[in-house]
Image (cartoon, rainbow, N blue to C red):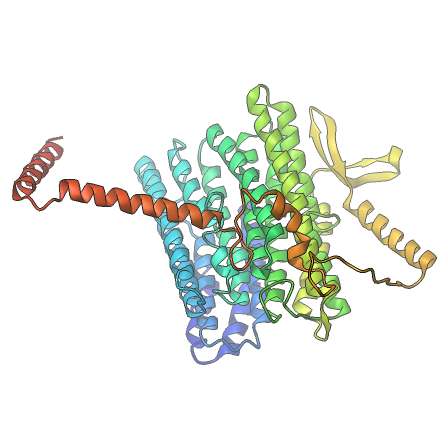
Length: 567
């Protein structure tokens, strides 16, 4: 893989002086990464992560060709280099090296574009917490095998520690605003946010999935991942729904997607039959593709506008960019026939199928996880509808077409059909007029549990749209007076769109200056105050300036060292 890693290192050096050549090198390397993953997929299914990551980098590098940020090319190339090292690593040391190379440039870029003092430091602090946990997990793995290579493990303890570390990086509940809320405040350019959201968390998912394949089945971890992932989807989507900040909404949407991916890993870990395990693996790949592709396009769109509030910001729009945004937000909402729709349908089917198969109270875990994810998808649909309406469909100013947004939108539609064609779970229903291979199905004990046909949905939507246009003719708009919460001018705001939920959950949610949720930071401040107060009490009790006490401490320390050495 040196033919990919070395050009990325070269791009980082070239970017210090020449920005456009650096992006060209990144684009070529990313394309090679996509091809490498596609060629290796038949031998190693994990190679799909290489193709997805390379595709995200390729779009970002092309979109940044005219960017005038002095430091972004070099720092972005370094981050891509770290991700590539982690995704192609064969041992723990190279993975950790890539993990740090991926993180540090992102911290620098966030710091260079800071608007507040703490976001970059919070980002780095939790990134390093993740690194510490990964070091601990890999150390436990090394103690079992005596090898630093990725080899099968004897117990599931290393996986438990590593899962916690990867979850921190993915921003999973309760850490769900530690990584993305600083970005929501504009602490990083949208061009970098696209990479961080779409592929940095993808590396964490890759690491967790790879280690789970090398570890014994861990049912308690599977139940935990499902439960935590389900609640993360619900709360991430809820916070996205009430956020009035463009990147804040997208950031919380990323948290929601990461929760769904984590829950899918949990379903894979506890799958009671092999067919459900295969379906969970298929859903994991489809969801990763859907999230990475759509989120890249939306974050790049966020960087094209003027302003941060969804209600007040201004975006250029055209018919092509509107179509692209509709497709991207449809995929993020889990709507067919996009790849996100296929993934979301499969995700819910897996959870409900496991609930039907697993006996006893434990069968309630996948059931409630599926319910939480379904509720979260409802909030996600509302959030994406608001984003597309205010940014492009009804509030945009005619002008630029944003080719990268249109391209990303078409890709999520095409990928939905590709995922459908590549699915090994296709069946037919001749009695319904659906030929063999036209539906994707989940089977239990030989019978169909649930099925969907993306092609049939696409044809139904297209024919319905065509018939509506033929019957009703061109669109005719009618303006209706709106009540805008007592404001003097008749303009419905993004804030008012979600104010119903905000008011109903006002005991849970606390609004900050930008309309974002401040619940986490309130908890962090309370924890910090408790820690400081406890530290002062301990200091005053044991470090009280008495020489006698210090002598006692020294004697106890010597005795402790002697005891440890004698063991």
